[in-house]
Amino acid sequence: PKRVSMKKKERYVEDLINRLGLTKAADTIVGDAKVRGISGGEKKRLSLGCELISRPQLIFADEPTSGLDSFQADKVMSTMRRLAHDGHTVICTIHQPSSCVFNLFDDLMLIADGETVYSGDATKAVEYFKGLGFPCPDNFNPAEYFTDLISIDYSSDEQIQVSKARVARLKDAWRKRERDTGVVGRNLYDALEIVSGAPQLAEDQPSWWEQFKLLLFRSWRQATRAMAVNVVRLAISVTSALIFGSIYFQVGTAQGSIQSRLGLFQMMAVSTAMQAVSKVLNVFPTERTIVQNERAKNAYDIGPYFLSKLVAEVPISAAIPLTFGALLYPMAGLNANLARFLRFLGIMTLESFSSAGFGLMIGAMAPNTDAALAMGPSSMLIFILFGGYSINQDTVPRIFRWLPGVSLIRWAFQAYCLNDLRGLEFQATRPSDTKLGDEVLERLGFGGCNVGDAMMTQAKIATFWHLAAFLILKMKRPQFLPVERPPHSATIDEIVDDHHPALDPKRRFDKDTNSDSDSSTGDRLRHSDSLLEALSEPMAEPGHEYDEQQHRHDGHDARTPDSTAPQSAS
Image 1: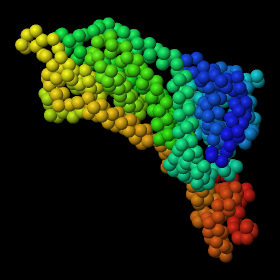
Image 2 (image 1 turned 30 degrees about the vertical axis):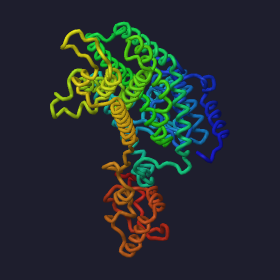
Image 3 (image 1 turned 45 degrees about the horizontal axis):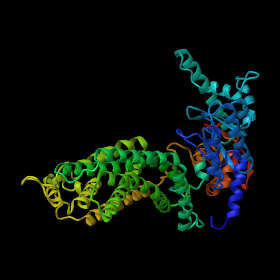
């Protein structure tokens, strides 16, 4: 928040690192499947730290020990316990915890087939099941014993019946305990204020400019940190330029050079586009998942993030095509003019940015990296087909006439041709030979065009793809389902009407006290505190007969059940 000074923020982060036991790993990259980083337990604790930045009151951890050895699992759960004792409410779902981890629990809830089997103090669970005739053996991990106790054994039909009967007995025992203690049917939905939709942004959220500066710093550090990847990309670009430069070395102005030049231009357009798209598709879908999680916490808006990402990647994204073009142009012996050489580099860089925007759009739509890698190249094939070299725009069927207009490869190819062939003269030894590059442009359908218009159209396409990616990310913001009452959950009113003798209209009351009882009912239905107090009173089976003796309760006359009658609730 803006009201917190930078020193306090840094001090809070340092304290959080110490509390999570991440001091030694503070300056270590997280790593992934390709890059070695921190350990699995440290990653679990780091994920907790990312959540604790906003100081949440409730922490819900789904299987925080999965995939960890016993030592790392104990470290993670010890951290959870410290957080709970520091004032956070910590809820965890854990399968097969070790005895050390189990001893860290304050409260325990056991669930079998979606129903509660036990909920309460973890230290009293052993005694509870012992009272039901299921004592835990000595020197045995209670967690493992409880897991075996509430699980269905599908090894044989006989074992299925036995285990199902055991689990049913445990469920019935807990339901009876709930009825006996008078807490049956207490519904949290009656006590909680249900708020649907995403949480609103805090009023003291950092400004747009502050978000942009912080995200720009992070994006730049992320881009420069992957130096090994950038070096490999640069090496591939240099190698490709040398290979293609050797193949098309000094094409000259002979008649055969026309075909060579067109092939070179098409190859450059395809190569530049594919390199930019593949780079984005391999990285962005994974990064998008992280961004979505951070947006769910209202850490920042999508606008500052998207712009900071584009600005941070401009230098590195431009360096690759510039290096490729600077080596290839003189080796191929293209039009020897400085202005044309600079325009050539501009065309290649602009196409790279346009292709990156297309990759961002695909990455924003695709659910994961594999889907993005499948969608990107298949879409690029259409752009290649209508790239201006394989088919003439004038012969394209009318229904597909719009595709060349959106093909980023077509506009790059057209710009290369216009930049190099306009005004170029070829060696002509026969009357049928092509003498001028303008004749080639006419055959390609580019006769009435100029390189500036082609580059402007490419810039518009680049803007369109980036804007489309931004809008898709904005529309795919984290969604929150509204919390609704379960279809068959009992309300407090229903419980009172069904089970509480003093408030059940079907009970037989004394005529002299009937109006007083109705008044008591109205008061209780109007005041939630009185309802909860009413629920804690003894309950009786429906249809139970009451004696004629009256007693005074909260200033109203009501009947009491026979003391010899069984006290239970349906």
